[in-house]
Amino acid sequence: LQGIIWSEGFARGDLVSHFYDDVVPRLRAWHAAGLTLYVYSSGSVAAQRAWFTNSPEGDLTSLVSGLYDTENAGPKQESESYRRIARATGVEPSRLLFLSDRPGELDAARAAGWHAVGIRRPGEPYYEQGVGDHAQAGTFDEITVSRSTA
Image 1 (tube, rainbow, N blue to C red):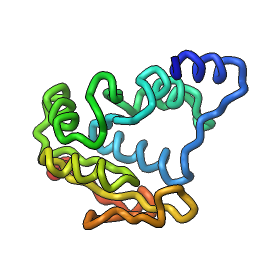
Image 2: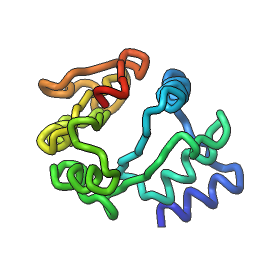
Image 3: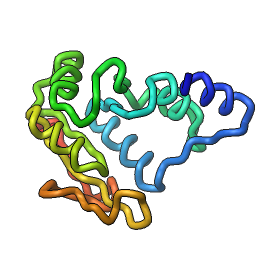
Image 4: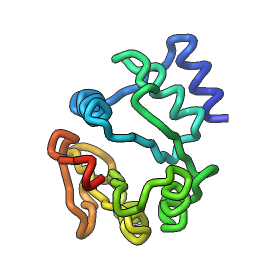
């Protein structure tokens, strides 16, 4: 239902997706460097597709190789969900990186063998709680990823 509502809202021009200024250039750079990008969100796959299709920067869906949500992967605070995504992508967990502002999600990803980095942007709802003992970044520009480690 969320995806349908979002798709209709985007189609009517009532909605426009939002990305922080550093995100789209970094996603493009990682994609151009040969990294395979996936999205795992609490939003439905249909909503994710609508979000990436209707960006102010244009259609960004070509940057993403797979979309995962709580229906096709499972709850984001359970490590089995991350194992399920790793199996679906065929990528070893130790070569996957998960970014989130939620410590429980970062913990679950790490428990499944993934790398995990907490994103902390002042003014965001979860900023004050921090990201536990995880590495953290304030922008995507602060994250270094290479094909040999991710």
